Image (tube, rainbow, N blue to C red; front, side, top):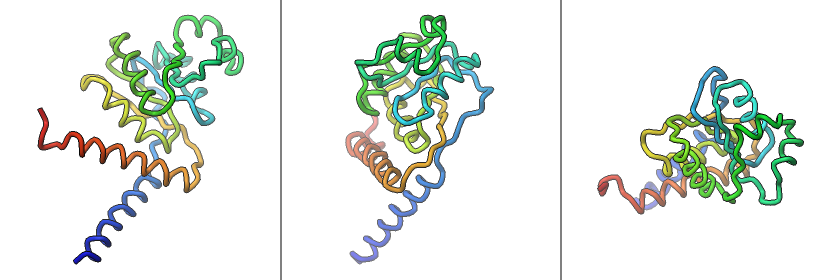
Length: 183
């Protein structure tokens, strides 16, 4: 009986990992409009994608969450060739976040101050599920999060680690707030 249970759990884990690795979220349709764009700093292509959405007029405001405290707005503008008018009117640099969970907390506060009802979340495809999960936990139910995954080529070890972080976060939430004990 123990071996069957262990084998069953191993199969669930394996199929979960395969689902996670094979069905990475992709880019959102470029015609979709939202109240805001939030990009989580990290791998190449994230900030560029968010800026293209902003410049195309698909959202009026952008939060770049997780910016290193040493990065100055002028430096970021120069590196990504952001026009000064766009930097001044429409882009907020978030310096408070240092991991995915704090990205979500920082972003939720920013969204609340702007009274946004829809958010385009931009991050790497392999990071999207956990980032969207963390953000949805922090935002009110009436705010819609649309996932805009930046395609990448993650290594097997990156996928393996991210799957376990995602699974662990969901398991912890389930343990702390079981669905049958909702208030």
